[in-house]
Amino acid sequence: MNVFCFILFAVLPAPDTLTLEQCYEEALRTHPYQEQIRTYENIAGLKIRNLNARYYPELLLSAQGSYQSQVMELSLPFPEFFPPKPKKNSYQASLLVNQLIYDFGQTSKQKSLEKTLKEYDVQSSHTEMYKVRQSVNDGYFSVLILQEKEKSLKLLEEDITAKFNSVKTKVENGTALPGSQDILEAEMIKIRQMMVENRILKKSSLRVLGELLNRSFDESVRLSVPNADAQTEKNTHRKRPEYGFFDLSRSRLIQTIALNNTKYLPRISGFGQLSYARPGLNYFNDKFQEYYIVGVKASWNVWNWNTNHREQDILRHQQKLVNAQEKYFTQSLNISLTRFEGEIEKLEELIKMDHEIIALRK
Image 1 (tube, rainbow, N blue to C red):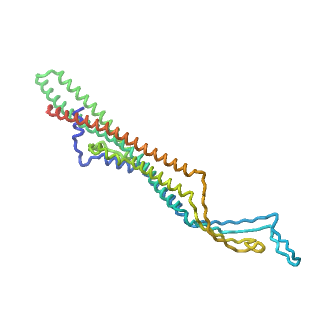
Image 2: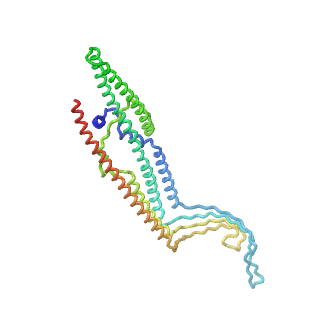
Image 3: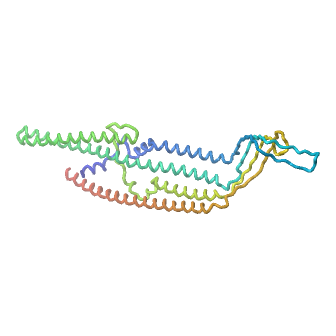
């Protein structure tokens, strides 16, 4: 087994071999979450277009007819003067226009938040997609070990075959017992069994790897041994997509706090109304009339029973949760890295012993 470890780490990749990084790229490129990322981007684009529409005029058509049981009458002390008496039925058709003038940055902050939410969802997908690397690792190294074991078995078969031929010659010449030949022949059969088992396991592992990469592999494909040095540096931690997810979580909460502060600021808008009605603004004119009304209005929620303050406190507590989750994630990575470094150190010591064993065999 120690000799095998040496062969595994010493082998050089052939020019036409498949690398681990290529497997990562193919697995991520064909991952179903890629479609999910495009969907998030489309949704965000539609939401921002809807927010931009806040600055477009709002048009509303309305029509109504009504009948009332009583109307206003005037009683004047002039017997010769008879003021007109309004009718009890009325009709009106109107075009109403509302135009937002200023909302103290609420819409712009909402648009910034929507962009951050899109990045947040996309980064969440990248975080989930990153987990496929572990599945690729399992499949890749399973095939790689079986591939190198196949080489080791072939070398062992050649060695036993050479010994078998040598003993066979000695038996024929009467200088060795026939039992020695039988023992070596049994070893050759055992090695062939191991080669058949290894080939079947390799074929199965290639199918698993092919499912992850959405492609099929021929049994002749060769995998290269990756360089493990870059995988053990602690400063590569920040390259993990989870850290981008934590950063976007904090940014999302900060922007939500800023947006909540604008919800209770004044909103200024203009309005207009064009109507055709009977009666019109002149209530004593019994004919259909056209008229319009234009103006500016402002609205301001001056008291919200301290709900905004409590909402801000909730968001600040959520920021603390994100910080705690990031701290725990970093701690878990450091623990895993320490274990891997110990495993690598053990393998390096075994490889040194492999060199000694190979030198003795030579």
